Every structure is written in structure tokens, then in C-alpha cells.
Amino acid sequence: GAVVSQHPSWVICKSGTSVKIECRSLDFQATTMFWYRQFPKQSLMLMATSNEGSKATYEQGVEKDKFLINHASLTLSTLTVTSAHPEDSSFYICSARPLDRFSYNEQFFGPGTRLTVL
Amino acid sequence: GEDVEQSLFLSVREGDSSVINCTYTDSSSTYLYWYKQEPGAGLQLLTYIFSNMDMKQDQRLTVLLNKKDKHLSLRIADTQTGDSAIYFCAESLGEDKFYFGSGTKLNVKP
Image 1 (tube, each protein chain N blue to C red):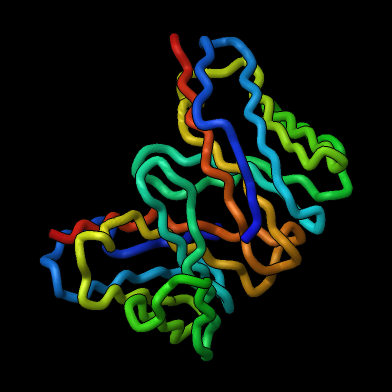
Image 2 (cartoon, rainbow over the protein chains, first blue to last red):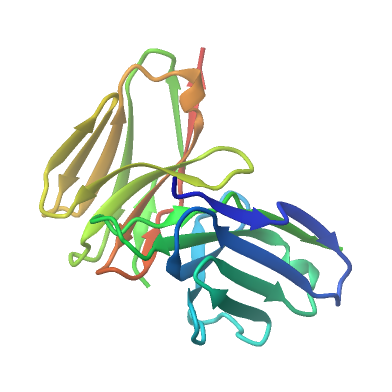
């Protein structure tokens, strides 16, 4: 149980286009999902916290108009990278915190989406 | 943000023990975690420890926590080639955000 999927697993797009990445909790409900960005050989950096039915909370330095987050249901959050540029190329990982939380605050991570902007 | 630091690389021979170290700065951490990331994949939770514990053992994994020094370690006994991956330590503050270390790349030589 506690599986999180992401779609697509990789995407290549042209500069200036928008890309949508989906994060789904497959067998549990998640009121809160998190979006991370990982540069090569670096750590995960939290971009935003996505709460079902409300606006996302963005970390300092993350442009909310650039990275649009929608958490429309208890099992789906989407991240849209608008007007993508090569510097947006990265590995994007989502995580989900179950509604019925385990005692150790675990977040379940998706497999990641590799975005390459040409 | 919080500072969580790890050494970048560790190389061991198959069958030896591996010890991966992590230091953190925020003493209000509630839980500390070790995650494993294989190439091109997401993060897999290996183990976690509550902040009021000193040690936790789970099969080949032993976690040691020194709260005074804000130091966390992960020991992998009898390391196998399949253990080669990047290992991240992370801390959570309350029930909200996770802060990750930079990751330690473990290379296991046959």
C-alpha cells in the first residue's frame, strides 16, 4: 500500500511551452502533497506544499506564477511549469502525506518526473 | 531553512559495514529519517527514528542519534552491491516540512 505515482515519468519540451506533471496517491487519500525539485547530484528542495481545496504554500524564492499547483482532490495534485526555460530542467518529485497519518509523519514519494527543456 | 549536512561519497567493499553520517542544526526535530534513492527513481524510506530515541535497529540497519551533537548515523551491516545508491537523511519539524541533506553516494565494490 501507500503508492504514489507521477505522470509523465519524463518529458522533453521546447522553451516557452507549459508542462503539467500529475501526482496521484493510488491507494490512500492525501490532504497534503509536497513538490520537490532535485538538481543533478543535489538534494531535494521543497518547492511548495499543496493542500486539497486551498491554495498552495510556496517556499521562499519559488515563483508561484511560474509553478502552478492545483490540488483538486484527495488523490491528485498537479504541478504546471509555465513558459518553461532550459533552467527549469530538473527532476521533480512529489510526496503525499496520508489522511490517516502514521505516527512518524511519513511522506510517501513518487518516482519523479524528469523535465528537459530544449 | 534548516541545515542538514552529509558527506558526499562513501566507498566500501562488499561484506563490510557502511556508516553514513548526517548532522542537523534544528534541535526541535520530531523525527529523523533515512531514505534511499536509486538512479532515476524516487525516494524509498529505509528507517526513521523518533527524536527522543538514541538507537534503532532494523535487520541490517542501525540508526544512532546523538541529540547533544545533533548527529545522526546509518550503519548498514554486510553491505551488498544492491545497497549502492544515494542515501538521504531528513528531519521533520512538527508535522510539516521535511528538510533533506545533500545525499551520500554509497558505492559498494564487489
